Length: 168
Image (tube, rainbow, N blue to C red; front, side, top):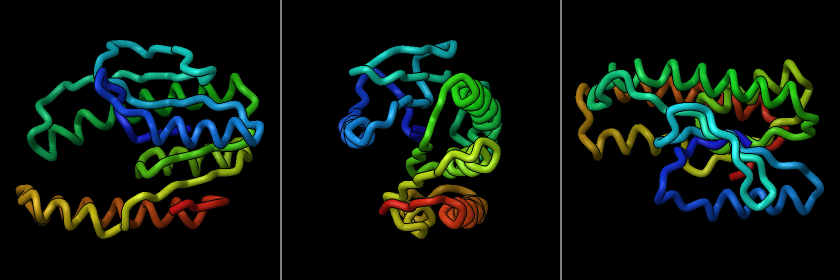
């Protein structure tokens, strides 16, 4: 499972536990791969019989600007991609579940194509909601954020078209 959430000490995992328990009930072995706010290195743990890989989300620049967020996101994505590919190579997986995130969706489509693993993609919010949220938050420069939201929406549509199953 590639999840967009970031693990933190106050994190609620109820939706993920529900999803994982359904998958386990259908005979799937479940492994979570997610970002961690607190780990300086990749950490592997077991939670209720589920392997959890927490990849570090190291901030090199302040995330108050779009440039800082983008600069910090690139190494985090590459780190998570490397761990995900390593986990996929080491295990025998019969299903890849991606929840919501744009980059995780692209990683999922790559893994689906390369390793011939069926992809399930869950969308929880309408595609237009991100742009509306940027308007409400009054992010500056708004045009840049709206363009990013449009590109992310296109990439999510690309992922949905390539997924074997899309869940609302």
